Length: 135
Image (cartoon, rainbow, N blue to C red; front, side, top):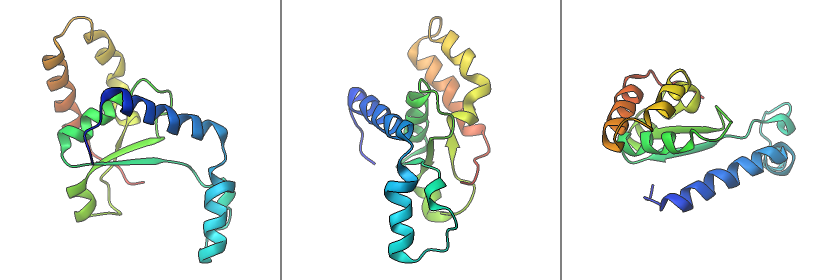
């Protein structure tokens, strides 16, 4: 929920991505939790690892999503607003890089021609028009 310095945020994305690449979430975290709390999950060792970012505003959500675009995983990072989470925690409230994928090349090309303000407004208008998905 805080506003972090760009380098700190980049390091956070990279750390989560590196952890994902180790493929240890299911065995190290999910399986022990299933045993401890007797959860009805058949194969916790195969549980998917996702990082859920909850932002105070749609603008912050969009900025976080755009910052994550350079990493190769399309569904590792999911983004929602706190208001949407409070209103419908199990509903279609999430956006991901996959949501923005059809426009990623255009975004990258426009980084060379548009001002940062114009590019940001264009990207935010697109992201705000997308239909969010469920996890």
